[in-house]
Image 1: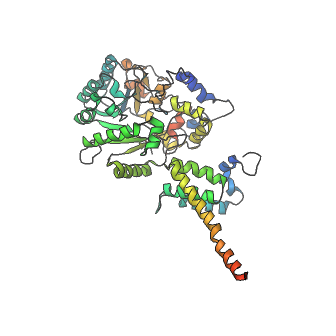
Image 2: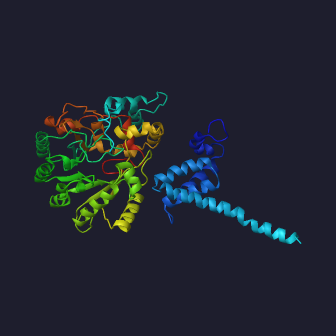
Image 3: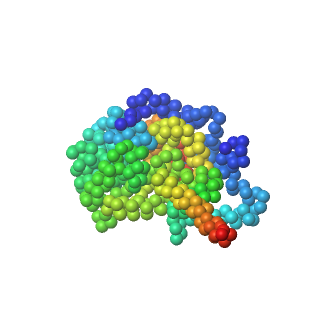
Length: 111
Length: 350
């Protein structure tokens, strides 16, 4: 990803975000760390959710990070792809469900 | 079945080439802080032993499997086997040094050594705790090995077995086609003999190691998942899970280089350096004996042919006084034992 807006090496610099705004940066990373701990959901389950969300928000850094993390935590390739399909279905469904709004509007103005 | 690096006449079959790659990297433009410097920065250099308690013996490189990550480069084509004479020298060392409480037998598949059962019986006569690193499939490999669970039970041996994952795909990918199915059958045979059952006291521990260029996840979480999955699917019980990091030597080093993951993996290990883990590395209370009787700080130094930095270099010269006053030989591969929660033959160290 060199020579583009996204650079894979930048992922390692994520922690430096606090350099420009220490207080908020530290609060974010503390919160982030807490979110991904074993709790009502396991860290393993959270990793798969994060992978799906990473695809939904199309963040290449997050996709890199959580593809590794989810595989390391024992999810299979097929399970990880199913999670991506869940993200895809929700994104696709989110567009399609707006079709109801289109139908409503057309019905409102059509003879 | 794939061949060992040794049979392929690979450059990596020569431990000097491995050390060269680890010290200077493959390409020369990748720099990693020397492990020794890392120890110095954290006040741990020179690394010195505690009291030696574990006597780990590699009784041969022959194995019925050819696992892709094997640090021994073991396989059916390896002929290095410990002789009965060397075993007798080990027994003398044990007899003279009662502080060596545990004897950890490894290989290859240790059971392939024709004197394996005799050696175990002689060690038990000296009243030592014995661990056998059993690859599981050996139990089904030939009729003469079907009685191994009963033999282990008879001598109250602790069995430690690799099962890289609780699914077939990941296990077979690392250890070869059909290994998962045979491993499950062998585990069921061990359970039938009483191994892994809480009320029997017969210990069956499993070993997880990553099927790729990454570090193990939390040992505690993984153990829960293993226990649930193996019970739900196969009604298998076991005692503890040891999560072990793959060290960048031999066949795993070959995999890292072939897959272009070497630099990334080494950086990951170095970034995860943990001084608490470094303080508890297994080489501080273990001595490793090679198939030919030479002594090493650990099984990994053995495979890199990094002999002890003291005058007692062979089992025939065994002296706890000399061994306890030595400095442990370290190299870049040692980052594998100090990453994260650490790694040893008994899993995480913290």
